[in-house]
Structures are given as structure tokens and as C-alpha cells.
Image (cartoon, rainbow over all chains, first blue to last red; front, side):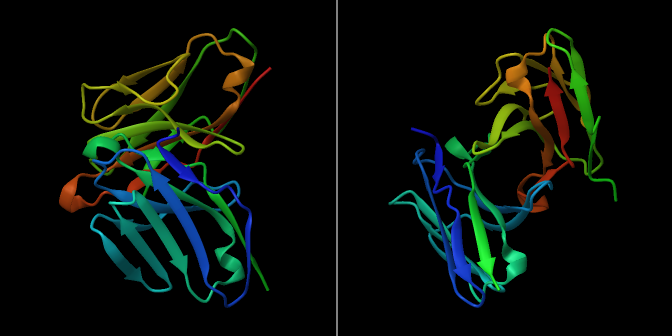
Length: 111
Length: 114
């Protein structure tokens, strides 16, 4: 079992809809969780970080963490064509700095 | 603002050749990383360094060596390149605690082994 698992997609949503991206992780003592966005041919960039159970909102983005279920998600409201990218979930297993990424979910937002 | 700088950006190697990917960061970060990215595989951690003078294996360390030369620089060496090492390589660095847990990536190095 991979340490961080994501549905590879592609996930296709119409413009203006909510995109929901999901991630599960295997290490129960993980403390830090991240969502990165990567455009084709570019390096990843941080969208959100979350450390506590519950929701964290930043503009159109909401990260949700459930440590009991070992599950973290990212919601993108009012999706725009510019949101079309690969979204990478990342976790620090064991509470350290050995950051592990999932394989990523490709998102397409149709105009 | 330079951030994380890695060189070279593109390289073609013959099987069995060696090379070193160079990486430097100017953000005074303690942690540095080398990842490789292959289609459908996401980012896989090769090696990381939590602080100057320490290095640890990641998910896919075989065939690679690293050196944390100082706080700024973290190099990745392929001693005998193989076609399976054809990939995009990303160097990254990360601050600690209050300085943020954001990982900052370099622009990537496209390596082809023929």
C-alpha cells in the first residue's frame, strides 16, 4: 500500500461547479498535510496546508482533514478553466520532514 | 528572488555515464529534497536532508547518491545512469515551524538516458 493515495482521474467538472479531490494516507501519526497544484511542464506550488481536524478555507479552496479516517480532501468552489491542473496531496509521515506525495489527480474544468 | 535553483535544466546521458544535478536555495531552509516525477507516478522522494550534515533515503534511493555540501546546497549524483532513470528531477527546500512548512521547488531538470 502506498503511503499516500489519490484517484488519478481525470476529474472533469463544468465551469462554476465544485471540484472535490480526495486523498488517503497510511501513517496514523502524520501531522502535516498539504495540497499542491502543478501545471503541465511546471513545478508544484502550494495551495493549502492543514494540520488539525476539520475544515480550513482560503478563498475558493477548502481543505478538510479527518485524522480518524486518515483522509484529507480539497474542495474548489466556482471552478475556473485556469484551475485545470494536477493536484498533489502530500503528507509528512511520522511527524517528520520526509514529505511524501501522492500520484496526483488531474482536474479538467470545462468552459 | 532566486528561491531554489537547480542545474542543468536539460541533459541527455548515455547508459553508464555519470552526472551530478546541482541544487542551491537562498531561503536559509534547513530541509532539502530530491524528487523524481514520472508519468502517472507523481513525485517520488529519492533522498532528503533534514539539516546540514544529514541525509536520509526516501522512497526510491537506489542508483543515486546525495551530498549536503552546506546549508544552501544539496546535490544528486547518478554514478552509472540507466534508462530507468529517465525522468524529471525536482529539488526542493522547506522552512521549519513558524517560517512555514511550504516546500519550494526548483524548476526541474529533464534527464534522458539513452
